Length: 142
View 1 (cartoon, rainbow, N blue to C red):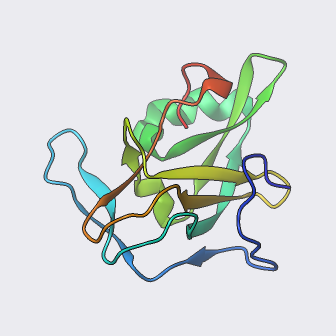
View 2 (view 1 turned 60 degrees about the vertical axis):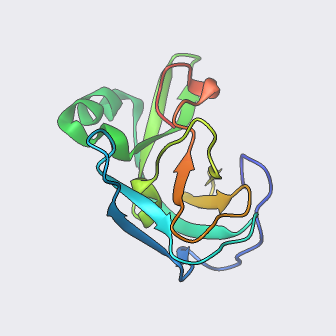
């Protein structure tokens, strides 16, 4: 059961990654490493499908404050306030924020996995970015 827009069906797969993406230094002092296309990638391509580890609401703030904030994704909201989070075990965790992102995250709540999907055509050597701010979780990370 995917909670965001439908993605191409990947039956029976817990993980998947296309050839054509890599992690490299961005050259920016603020971004560090990032995810880049090494060949042109069409829109609506599943770039990475990764299993996740769910962090319960009681542990979320502790883990966030350990310095892993950039690798934590909001997962689900409980009681209107507390949120659970997820750590993705794939290359998608290296995506940086973009004000005009070229990819998005979709969550498979039942299968405990996340997909990184291109939202437009991506050029070779272009950084793959997502929007960190998730309005479902107010000021929490994507």
